[in-house]
Image 1: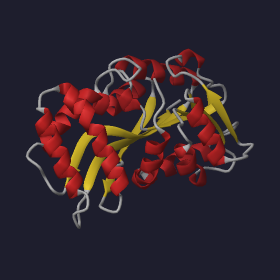
Image 2 (image 1 turned 135 degrees about the horizontal axis):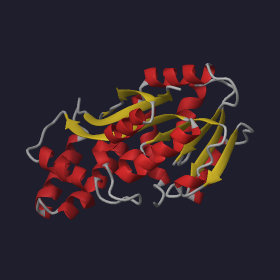
Image 3 (image 1 turned 60 degrees about the vertical axis):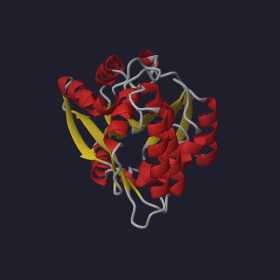
Image 4 (image 1 turned 180 degrees about the horizontal axis):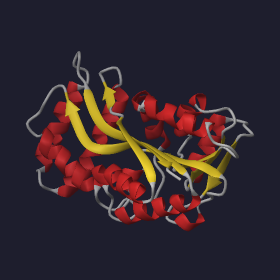
Length: 266
């Protein structure tokens, strides 16, 4: 799987931080505070370190982090943005190699906006791997298939349906689960003896976040065209309407996400 563009990650970080479910973060903090032994977290697909920035202030001071990604440019940017910190280490690793995940002494694995890109087989094997190691698990901002705009358009439902079909194509880990990822993870986690808590974490982005909304709309064009159920003219017309609507007073786009926290029962 190739890395994400650092500019896109920077654009979305504020919306991500605002959307994270605070109750689940607090529950993760309580779980870690109640543990004895090393408090090490492994953040997979860390990008530029947004999960670290979002969670660090809320977690116990004793927590140590391993930030893992396969993109050397994103890892370098994470290292630059975090700066000197002897509690944080950076690791390059391809997530297709689940057997090689460094889980020794890891209290919990964290990830953000990742598992909707993964296949059912990947999610199953990942859960088996962390369950074997006895790790907790926090996965935030997994896309759930919902887009809702305050200004409706007749093609909204058709465009989102095609986008979601494209979300289920291979993103580097086999046929992706897209909006079904959280349900798949929760099922496998419960089968492996975890106590699973889910919470909504939707983006709510308005006209003051023009750049984010514009970039998000740009991300619709090619996937929806590839599905080919709508004409290019229809897709371009929908995009033109949506771009014009961004600046409308009171306009709002809500994008559905779900956060998950899984704690081993044993």
